[in-house]
Amino acid sequence: MTNTIEIKNLNYRKNYRSILEDVNLNIGAGKTVGLLGENGAGKTTLMRLIAGVAKGASGSISIDGKDDVSLKKSFVSFSEQLNGFSSSMRIDKIIRFYEDVYPDFSTEKYNQMAGFLQIDEGLRLSALSKGMKEKLVIGLTLSRDTKVYLLDEPFGGIDSMSRKKIIQSIIKWKNDDAIILVSDHYVSEIASILDEVVIIKDRTIYTQKSAEEIRSKYAEGIEQYYESVYEGNDIDD
Ligand SMILES: Nc1ncnc2c1ncn2[C@@H]1O[C@H](COP(=O)(O)OP(=O)(O)OP(=O)(O)O)[C@@H](O)[C@H]1O
Image (cartoon, rainbow, N blue to C red; front, side, top):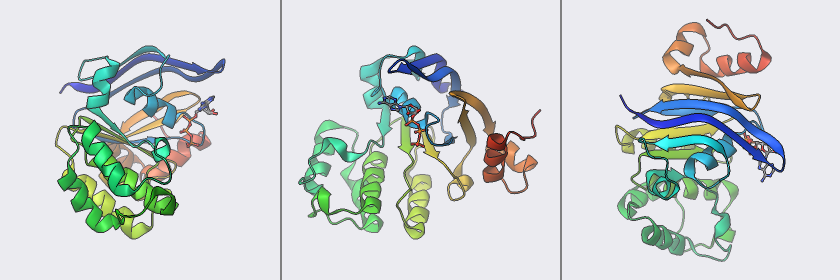
């Protein structure tokens, strides 16, 4: 199988501080991967680098063998927060913007998700709660047809019923060969759909393991494994 995301010797500094060091990571086509790490570990930074939003790293990040920033925009759908939009903008205008900017954006797919996201398109951004904004970001991100979806801590403010529905829709709509990388501090709800787990610790990729391997070693599953890594007592080969 081809490696759809291939990261080699990636180093990134910001304001004279090292943020990521010697990151090497391969993610195969079709995988749903949990990117875990404590606050400030570098999850968002790594996603911004993969999406081509953050620049200035050394090393390489290629998607389907191509390391070209302009192509990344068409290959990667990244759940950026809606900071670029004015808070007085109406949701329907934001959706029209996505339709114009991303030729792969499917309004039909968005409308299907909107059924359970229950976001009134007539509202202005400023009228949305934290959880409603997060739902909108997820809906917009997943409604594109791309090779890679990056969901950065997507569920923080979302109630558990909606989380479950969103997770079901991820399974339903994901193309077989698309990659989903989803970051979080804890994983209990998404654990069931993960094929692999990647943990960032000490500015680098501490481990990448298949979810199956973790489940076979840890009775309580991925959450327990993640905690044991951070407590420094993971059972390893
Ligand atoms: N614009 C910036 N300028 C300087 N340092 C930054 C900037 N953005 C992030 N950092 C630093 O980079 C490190 C990684 O931050 P990042 O946001 O990628 O972590 P994270 O794992 O996503 O954290 P969280 O779970 O809290 O969102 C942190 O130490 C943070 O202070």
